[in-house]
Image 1 (cartoon, rainbow, N blue to C red):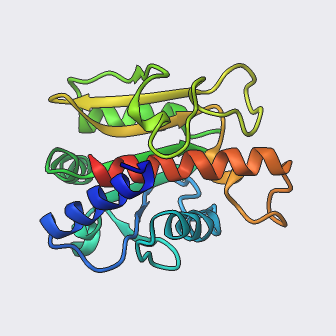
Image 2: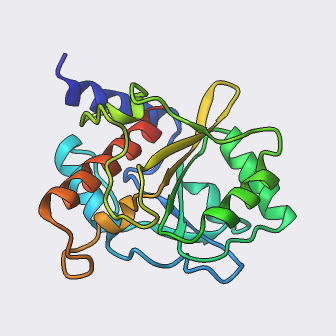
Length: 218
């Protein structure tokens, strides 16, 4: 079976099983602490357009935004968090995010360069028993639609060195994917926002699509 058709069938089955809305979207997390949760304004506009072109699945124009304690936070199967600064979860938020993730939700976290220390600290509130592990390059997330045999692409230099695709695995399921030291989100932005070389932007979009497809089919 054609790989794209197979993915399309999986997503369709997922949406029917979850009794989801007709369109795919992502819930961006509004958080306290002073970090810029609201950045990367065109990231999902471009990712959703690419995803729709590949699969034919209807997507929203852009992502939704909500605090973890908002009533509609659980309305989408994928949550997203990014930024350059401090992240802080209340005890209630940490517990609710755990409920979301252990109940089938998925979190894509992307370090814009500066949130790493606080994000790791706050995720310890959510999963005190878990540690981030680096995913092997043969993990499915790197081979959903596009193949990345060397793991995450390097988009922005930031701290230098290789990027890392890190995960929190709960009862055998990847519930958090954390792209560190690369900045996939910035790479997916409009060219006038981040004038990256075309090959970098293409790599970021491809990896972003892989992450969304993985979350939708697992």
